[in-house]
Image 1 (cartoon, rainbow, N blue to C red):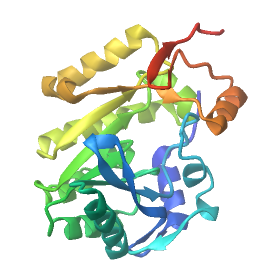
Image 2 (image 1 turned 90 degrees about the vertical axis):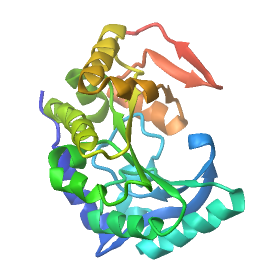
Image 3 (image 1 turned 180 degrees about the vertical axis):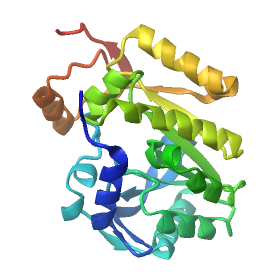
Length: 256
């Protein structure tokens, strides 16, 4: 069982989506329903290529998507949209939030001068491999929350849905531990569309062993089958056990 190295892929993707302190985005401010109503900017580029990803071009065609924006431009886009919709929470979504370390930290410095609360959505690869990155994030205790997304519940399922090497499954757990130790606000989202119930419970138990409090805000995420997602899953021969459809979670008969 081989697979790519997400850290190597992340560095490679940064070469086409990061230019100095600028990063590629497709949109700087859009209202979304998440976090009880928030404003999000759509970033380009990720260190994982999850076959169920809804972001599509932002992840799979980063060299042909978006344009470069400075941290100040992103901040202005986010806060102007947030003001129109009376949102306190702002975020970056659609790509890996930690790509472009200089860009993210500069953006957070802008946020720190406001009453806004920034959610950094991350797969945990960079944060789990670099404790100094986590230390940098401790500068923003009143303005930052990190949402770590676990891509399925065991190394084998992680490999199947991302194509990454199974060993990389450990990195988000290390990120969660490091963030808790550094007293950075953190929550966990566990993608649970392909794993067995037993593996899901094993992952939940592992999270509880890191810190029982993490379970209070734990999200179990099921994928939505957009047309592009359907094509990718069929090409890879992947059949989800659970999907979200029209607000409902559907249990599917597992096809072998």
